[in-house]
Length: 100
Image (cartoon, rainbow, N blue to C red; front, top):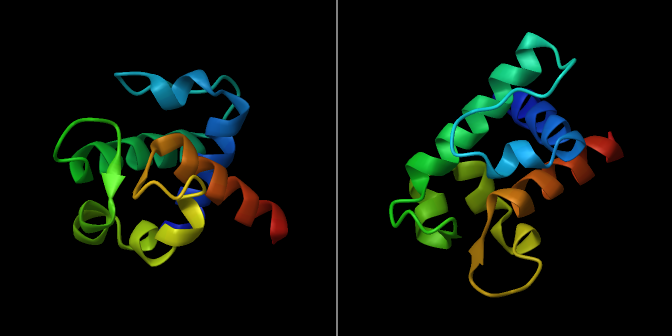
């Protein structure tokens, strides 16, 4: 269930890219309450896992706070720079949701 909510959040974030960069949780217009909740949850989990508060998750931070991201870290880290960002995670989720 959690994976589905995360995927839905990623899809919603792709429709409203500004939401991914907001400091406070924003809700895309017309999104269902479940999608809105999932988006807020994704942003919150990313913020909690990002212990250095630099907008980047290392593999270690992902392992500690976002196990699904850690599991797919190499796929999400498309630039191969050793960290992932929230937009990269959302893009990965959107891509995998589209494949289903």
